Image (cartoon, rainbow, N blue to C red):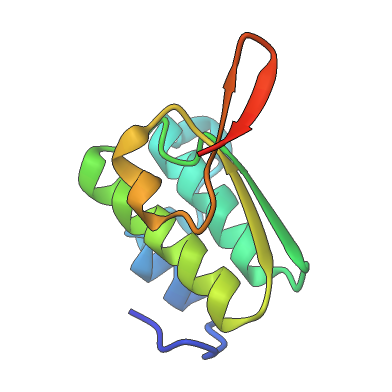
Length: 110
């Protein structure tokens, strides 16, 4: 795993996300989980101040999903970025700094 603040190459990101084998593949041959992890690597490789993650664990098993959310958190903290994640996966809520729940059209801070 990368150290906080350490800039990684795309190859290192792909390796950490267990998708190094898809570097030369077209998106049409990738699984949903592989596509999702490629999108996460792209978000990390950009220099954007805000990372938006819509259901980042949806196509991933619980171990990979937790790892991806840990990476999002580490990336946000170590590089002074903001990250907003929308998810139904309550298994990763322990990694969030702030949690809001939307129910019946109302947003409530938890």
